[in-house]
Image: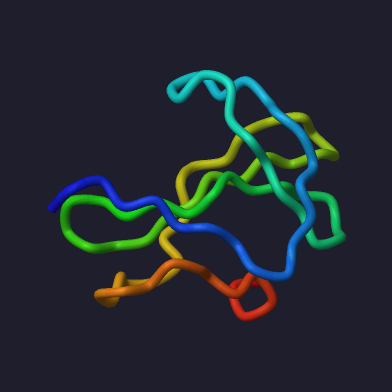
Length: 81
């Protein structure tokens, strides 16, 4: 499967943060104390994102948020949280 990049719906761009494995990444939020990277699809078709906690200034592990369906371009952030 070719690399598939998805985008969030219902969020605001927050800024760029250095991720220890990915380098500088764009992050997004919809309120609260966490920001998230754009969702990506792995080789098995699982969709995941990386969460950065603004309270502790730490990255958490990748979070699986769903399964890719052909033609999918966006993930609704409100349904995710």
